[in-house]
Figure 1 (cartoon, rainbow, N blue to C red):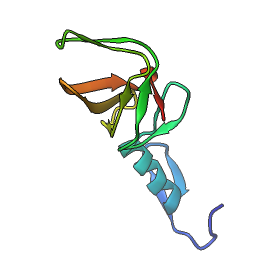
Figure 2 (figure 1 turned 135 degrees about the vertical axis):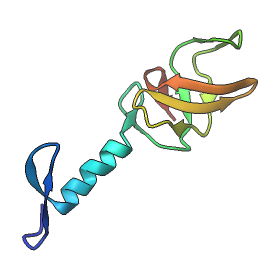
Figure 3 (figure 1 turned 30 degrees about the horizontal axis):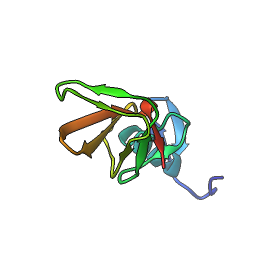
Amino acid sequence: MTDSSEDYVYDEESGEWLPASERAERQRAAIHPEVRDAVGNLLADGDQVTLIKDLDVKGAGQTLKRGTLIKAIRLTGDVQEIDCKFDGIKGLVLRAEFVRKR
């Protein structure tokens, strides 16, 4: 609910006059999109995730097995990808649809 004394600003994308707080929230969502795992849980930087299927890692000649724990993920700004570290694999990027938040 918006406060009646709140300032309104013109949003050029939608062509509407919006409360300043709503416009700020829309801009924040555009910069930091919500990243969700395979079952819809919201992911954040530093979360731990578990793989839900075996994944072949291109260039590493290695397969990550289902149930593998990945610690301290980082969001990339893409709603489909997360950046993470795993022993022996540099620059590992996983699709969010193949992980589940722990």
